[in-house]
Length: 524
Image (cartoon, rainbow, N blue to C red; front, side, top):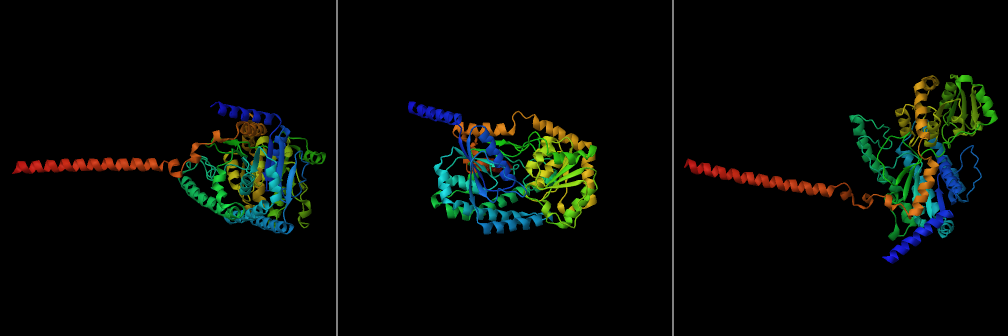
């Protein structure tokens, strides 16, 4: 007993000393765009709070068209992808972008993308020298971009405890063991709100079973990677790795999302990128000042989308902006603008925009967006209504939440015409109820007890100080499925009821026979 107490004391003191001098933390980012921006922000926040942070970044995926990488205050460990493969992958992305702008987004595209990710994962796990160096560095914990299953495999390969950060809402709730009552919690990709009628609940139930099939397909895509890079006796299952993180962070909160049950190891830190606005450049300020009371509209369809591959759609959007009274600041790669399409005088193209600062400007009236989480959380933070053009992934479900909260609406890209789109913009900007609801959500968001960056730091330090997050995990994760769903109990009760009914029938039958035999005796 004394030895055990001494061991606990030594571990506790070591952890306190470690946090005094800063923990050694590895962040793993293998997907670019907004995923990189979020992982970079997480790394910077932890670095600023005194921790020794390093990022393992896959070069070629961290770049975004028009974006200039900021100087990093923390070390970044990179490795280059094969140039030929990168060209092939970029071609794959552009081809699928064309499909998305035509309103064609489906499971096939998602599975094809994951096959590309699994192919990249093989190459990453082949970087044995880098992985050995990372393993020898003895990190205290890893924080991974949980969108990419490969980050789980890398953490497992390095033998690291890890915290999983999911860059969106609860798309993987079932996989991580979250209670999901189908009567009011919409399944990912169902495009339902939490207020479902009978037939919507039927749809949600079928979507649940369909989502389980999709999960199995995703796991199957990575089976080849696991077989190739892990010994037989230590091969992990993706489904087990999703239950293994010490903690789960989600890039959402309930100003945006529908209220639902959570578990202690699930924490919402949505809005890391949403901050008080800084002044915009003088060039932009001069342009904005010309708008008068009409204000301006911010247009951005995501960090990875710098242009529109569908020229007809581009013309319709451009025509719609020409019909509205607001100035329009459009994040669009100017060199890719078609020379035969005339830009209206109220529209300004920019290769990259500081979206958060623009949304925080007092004259910002509307955000036209693809419906990515970072954009929507920034719009909510600054109280700016939204018009969404969903292209792929979680954007459809995200914009369902925007409509349910009455801070905006959405329109599929294949339904956009200049007149219809302009009417939608006028509807959202002129109906004060949208702005009013957006400001209410902004007030709720800003009055949270702890900002998301503080939550991030405190929870990471708590996990390190506690020696892990096992105390936050329900015992259900260790139970067999039949115990978790009480099937053994239901079977036992069913058998007992059948026996009781059987005995009652037997007794009644016996009594009936006795009664009949007595009546016969009396008659004779």
